[in-house]
Image (cartoon, rainbow, N blue to C red):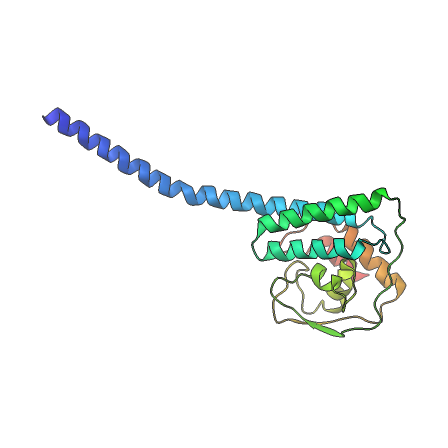
Length: 204
């Protein structure tokens, strides 16, 4: 009887330990999955942007592709990585189809009319704001906003709801070209860090 009770006690302790281990490991697995999904979403968005940079602004799907990428970034900012990945993939496929048509990319002129200021909303990024029709209508001109508001923006990847940004309506073609070039060649970025490429851009 004592042996039986001892075996029963060991079995119960093993069961409790297994449950405790399961409870302890699940959040780690979930966190790991979330990080993987976020990384994948960022990679898909970056790939979509890379393809979009090669599409002519006059192409019939140009605005649609830009909007899809902006929506993907908004979804990622809101934590909906699944939606962000789907939208980014769709934008990339649409951009690749436009590229195959062999349309030559042309220089984009800044929008001379429209809002002179913008209040940041939840889910916004400089890319999203710049792509809005009332701002520049081209997400690749976001460095213009960054430079015009360098006193308010420490990290180009980290802006906050309620911030009021000036919109540069007097940018020269050279400034627009420099902004687009920087947006395309900026390189890897991290939240909360001022990238060296951004510092170089601001110093010009």
